[in-house]
Image (cartoon, rainbow, N blue to C red; front, side, top):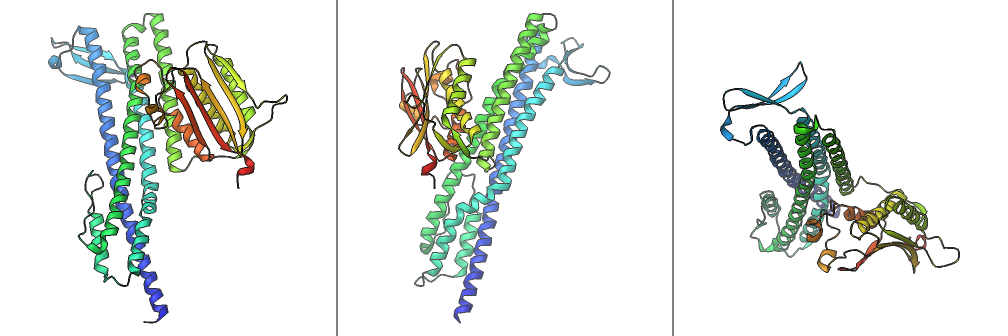
Length: 437
């Protein structure tokens, strides 16, 4: 065999192995997407059943004084003439009683649509971009296969590759403990590498599933509040203007909260898929922080705000290369957190500066502070400490996750100093323009 023929043979083998890896990646990704799809269906079904049953129980208790499962036939009816949806139930004596359920159905469909849009976006992202990520993670397997092919001392034939492919194809990605087991000593290293890769992918899938579950839980709260006020309006709001005004204001507030939560989820979804882009330009951290400082003073009169610029008679401008909109969003997230956890009339301090080849901006409060265990988790999505989650402080636990993504994209990092009962200082370090190559 000539040297040129040997090169051609190696090239053909490389192409075949690349095609096999792509095929395996697609199968693995399809398995993940299908399981995610059915997980979404189960979550939507459970939420829908809970919302509908809760509403039916409330209206029947309000009308009859109790709820009886065997009261009689129940149904939804659409009155075309009046364009009203009625919930019809037997009153126990054979007579049907109708309840106007139009508002409930409208709000239920709006909320379900918001959840559905977020889920469809997540599925499409996994379908179109998941296989590519799997292939990238399988690249070490290709390199190991090439090295194994080059070991002339090992008697290696094509059938071993086929056995390896069949073994990988038969691995169930949804199983938590199933691993690749070929039984070939010569492929022991490859087997270990593949098993480590599968474990990492399973952990990524578990994190994604946990994210979906947490998102559904956070959306369920405003849906329940809206449902409760709709029931109250249905009972008393038609005649009592005070109840009507209170219900409309509460529904408006919860709708805005849900809209904000969906926007945060979409931001993180775009970030995960690589569709969230930064527009970098030379900007002044002084000006950005001063804008956030003035906004805070204007909208919040319950706290004392101070802004510390670089020490000099004529404050030095701190310039960086970055996206002004994204960095301002980060500053607002930190300022909003400081307001939430700081008592009334206490101080919140903003600062910017330069140290060495890095610039920084910081937000410091005199609030409740954090324990060390919480500090290590604050950038996790939906994470909130037990004290905050059980208290009256609102929030979704997504703000710092968004801030972390923005700072990472600017090649910066966080420095956090917090003491329980004393307060928290969060510093964002960013590279100066001169240090960027």
